Image 1 (tube, helix red, strand yellow):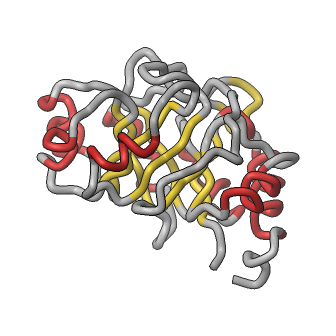
Image 2: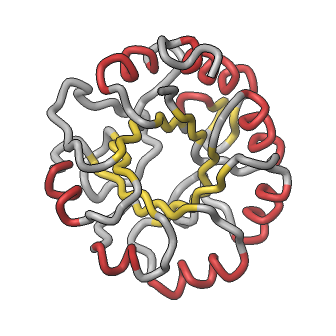
Image 3: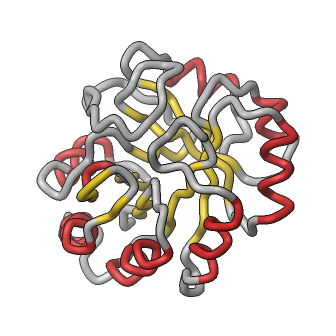
Length: 209
């Protein structure tokens, strides 16, 4: 089974296209105003317009009012939602979309989050503390015990030079990279994106898939 790739925090159409051409399966669009990688609905629409077929667009929200998520969904054709705060399951499920629930692994309890969100399509494990935003570049202990009830996506401090170790240790469904492929917050470096994707595909189980 190959490891899927998501490049998160995309803010420009050309970066989305570069990620897709490098082999990414999905891109992440941040709708959290406090993030340096935040985009508005208009820019998100322009970014998605540049995506080739079969590349998913994931919308990231963090403790947003329900009306905010609905407003974005009314304007932006997102494929999945990603909830990065303390959102309860009934909130996450109320949009009737597949969703990913993040876990801040610096003190967070992945087992508790998994139990509280049984309908989540995946758990995204990030290196920050619960309640903090992602994109910090912090890793976590990849040898931690993890729930087997959900597909796992690994995030937090991943780069081309360490993603192979994360994949070999956890054997996740996917990996998620943001700051590790940037020249500045929100600005993806085409060569770093390509190197990251190539390294993921190099790992045993990915070549030729």
